[in-house]
Length: 89
Image (tube, rainbow, N blue to C red; front, side, top):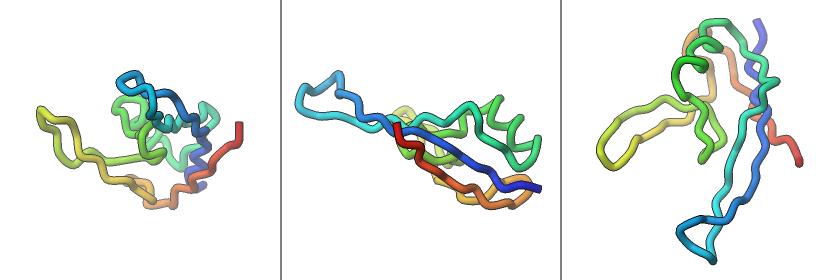
């Protein structure tokens, strides 16, 4: 089995709520190689990539204020390591 090669790009975007601030948008590449079909299918059904953190995450809590996410470094199904690689734009 392969590890997950999570190739992503990071783009700074202007914050629409503040003229002087910006935020980072981490976009996962469509060429991501998954370690197992279970994780790939899970990611298709549930939003597990965090654009804010640039990591796969597990949602801990959901409330009216939002969600609490925990970044993961291993596949929750087969246990293989996730390799995060920043692609330069």
